[in-house]
Length: 155
Image 1 (cartoon, rainbow, N blue to C red):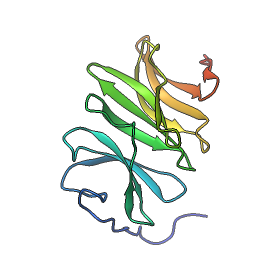
Image 2 (cartoon, rainbow, N blue to C red; image 1 turned 120 degrees about the vertical axis):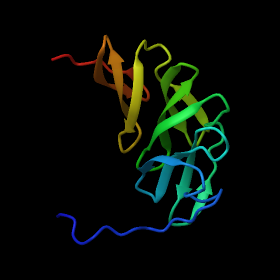
Image 3 (cartoon, rainbow, N blue to C red; image 1 turned 180 degrees about the vertical axis):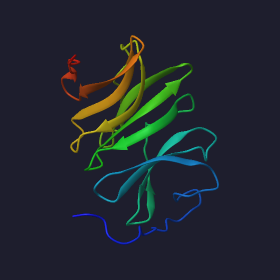
Image 4 (cartoon, helix red, strand yellow; image 1 turned 135 degrees about the vertical axis):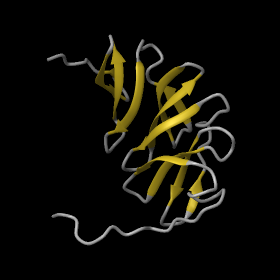
């Protein structure tokens, strides 16, 4: 089945508790359960926000944002349990995984000597794929939430 008709614009409320504030809103990612994760600089730093667009309310993310962490490219699992993102502190960027139930944040790439960006999650959040510049070339790496890094398959 293809798309038919013109795209429909969904009006999302603005303001500090909505989606479209007077500040930049970037990198939107949708889960299957009406959840939208995005980045905004509305509090003076680039933080992640979670919004339920059916209930039209913002959902807190305790333990995810911090003053010294610049968030980019968030991705949310289909069930909304996991959020992966690229986070920068100083001149180093890592891929982080946030567990909404335990409110724990885990750095997946702390020991990886590479530039990393653009994470994406499997539907259940078990695997996290991201881009990594290793040896001067961009490659795709996959991390298993429980087992750790998966082997990079070379052609």
